[in-house]
Length: 269
Image (cartoon, rainbow, N blue to C red; front, side, top):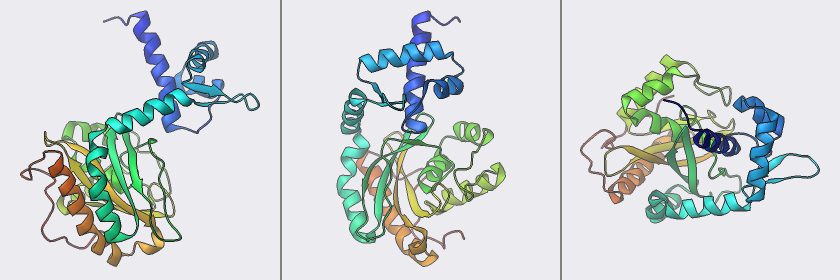
């Protein structure tokens, strides 16, 4: 099947925009061209089109491009339309009151996952997350609990691909990660110590939709120094309960994989 010229052009434009969700905030023509295997001339034409429509903007001094106001408006509208975020507000506030740490809501997106909401910790030293940025599923508790409950073919596809290291604690060995995912399915939640962000720790549980498929995750996160094994154990039931309640609001029935455990064992070391 041959690709129509218009379809190919549209695909290239989308690929350029998606680079801004994964990479640095400011991108240059040469970097984009290398990442996508395109000529600089093609990339420059795409960027000029996007600039004209406010999707990206050019910094005249650095000659680098960043996302523009039109993209921000589209992103804000998309977040308003996400049912997961809309129905989660009360559940997140309750979890925040219970733990006093930063509470996040993550959605499964093509190519990974993205934070779509957060309530920041009341502590003086606190963790915040970047909303809308795409992260891989193998790093951090919010991603791992999604990966653990994906349909097996999709999970195996991700495990077979490169597992890049975001920190020196990121699990990059396929078999080690596979063992951890099995433990997450048994526990009903995931924990992380410095896997996505070096000095951060978290506990997360999966959120399921009406069709029984995993839709996202709820997490509590903060500095590693506060996330002792004792705190993780105390926090985990609240996170699991929040994810269960949110899943129920989305129409999920607690009859299949992901059903929270009644008695949580000690978290993995």
